[in-house]
Image (cartoon, rainbow, N blue to C red; front, side, top):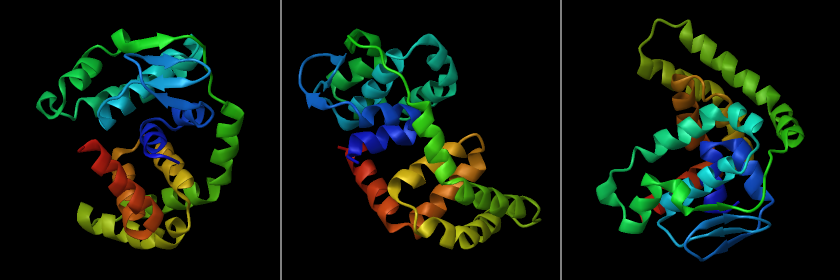
Length: 206
């Protein structure tokens, strides 16, 4: 998994599934969605954002509706970066992404494969939920509850691969505090995931 795929899956795992099967080339002035995904040379965060938008815009309407919350998350993520941190080309992309998109081929998410992967981590998902429910029943403060959750999930999360860790984080996104606790525990206990996150943030700052 390269940094671009990691970034897309951290924003929307289903969109990242599409990216797995698309060859990527760098070059040109626009993101071209076709048999190959042609990505313009941009700062990493602008490239990630534009690819996420492009994959989403290439979906049929029913799938766009299904991933409406995902694209809202993508837009919220974009808003975390002050314009002053961006080059002029990257700033233009984030301001008007559709001006830089050319969709030559419709895409769709492989929902059967998505369901298979979700089933594959169902045991870990349920264990994470139970660990969080126990912290919810505690009268301790947030910091103590977070620590208890991280201790309780260490063995569950330690052996997940990066793919599974990203999917698990995606599945709990509806609960902001649980997502925060989970990402902290993954960062502490899962070495491979921690390394990818460090690489990801280095890319965003470049």
